[in-house]
Amino acid sequence: MKRRDFLAGAAAFGAGALARPAIVRAQGSSVLKFIPQSDVTVLDPIWTTAYVTRNHGFMVFDQLYGMDASYKIQPQMVEGHTVEADGKLWKLTLRDGLVFHDGQKVLARDCVASIQRWGKRDAFGQTLMAMTDELSAPDDRTIQFRLKQPFPLLPEALGKPGSNFCAIMPERLAMTDPFKQVTEMVGSGPFRYKADERVVGSRVVYEKFAGYKPRESGAASLTAGPKIVHFDRVEWQVVPDPSTASAALQTGEVQWWENPTTDMIPLFKSNAKIKTPIADPAGQIACMRLNELHPPFDNPAIRRALLKAVQQSDFMISVVGDDASLYHVPTGVFTPGTPMASDAGLGVFTSPRDYDAVKKEIVAAGYKGERVVLMAPTDFPILKALADVGADMLQKVGFNVDYQAMDWGTVVQRRAKKEPIDQGGWNLFHTFWQGLDQMNPVGHAFLRGNGQSGLFGWPTSPKIEQLRQDWIAAPDLAAQQSLARQLQEQALIDVPYIPLGQNFYDTAYRTEIDGVLSGFVMFWNVHRT
Image (cartoon, rainbow, N blue to C red; front, side):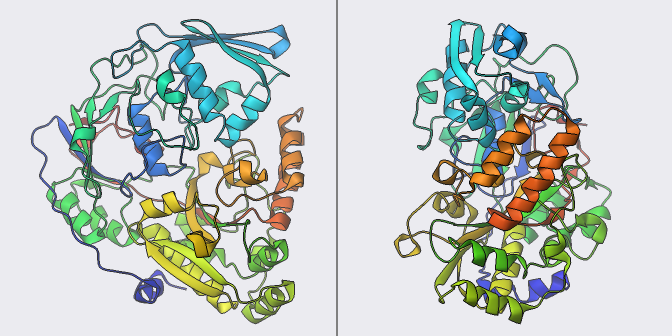
């Protein structure tokens, strides 16, 4: 199947014309103009896992630890830590001179409140807090964990760069219910959010925070090392139309486009003034998330039958085109090429597809023709491509698909709703996780089976949860890998989500800027040549 076939048929699934916003040319060398993947409709990086919010969050907030490009954890806001009592007492010491954007000093109690709020929402954070007997701030610079048992992954939890990352905010904000959004953006990160210049659907503005104190040693690498800012302002220009975005990058109206569509890449590669590197060597994993609170996907037999209809290559081609070097299938629940990845159970994706047989199996499993609400973001081209392929597949196997087109921000808000579809709920949507978020069972949010305490979709699987705990307690790599195989096999039985393949994607920026770090969009270290 060809990408152009999907594009030609896109109108059948609600592809609507979008208004083309005006873009104001950047004035002076101190301004960087950037086109993000979508608008930032949610500002709180604890409330949502949306990557556009994560990217926004890393500008405003800092972390206690960072991760470098070799996936090693390094101190960031902390000066260092000590471990005592046979691994059950950790004392983290904050660097001196850290301040929030409102001028207040960063204190240990701010960090404690931030960790506790994050620990109620994030999969890795939930695990850390379950291992913690007491989290306290014995003085202004010391954060203390008393653990129930040794947990050597503590820095990895606090320094994970994926969603949800442990964003440190003032105690008064961190005391907000984690299931309610924080809207006042006060962090200690390298940029200040300019709420007074925000234009919903069009523009987000950040300015350099003069009070930010970078680490004094090391090199900038992913979220670790000195975060040195070279631009006074970074302006995000929301441009849903790819043609408008392409023209803006080529003329220099903007300097960086986060997620150019695949069709634009050959044009950019022929332009000597534009670079198109692979953004992240770990790639991203496409996923179909099913809502297991309501019919029909509350039925595990229906979910298992649906696996047999999935042709992962169709989803990948819709996103990156026909170049097989830009995607990897079959893909399981762990990032291909990393230690926990395996082929366990993946035969379900490689056997011949028989839609008629799957249709009969779905009916036999109990499907009664219920309407299936598929949320499709029209302003996020790669996610719309996945939605179009998914809608086509679901219709082929007999589902009554209600394809509802909306912007990505609406998807992010609506996917938190637990109500039935007749009360504004949903049945499924498609998304991506970065490969670094799916390397192991602890940080893998979609692999949780903890029901309504987990992420939207809310799958329940006691077996997955037990295997996850066994993995955490595993004595060595061989034991971890064995348990990871069992986890993947169980995930293909309980189906908390459906993996759709791994792909690699380009970012695009003009040669007048340099210092762009590998991983995801980060604005420290970037400078004008």
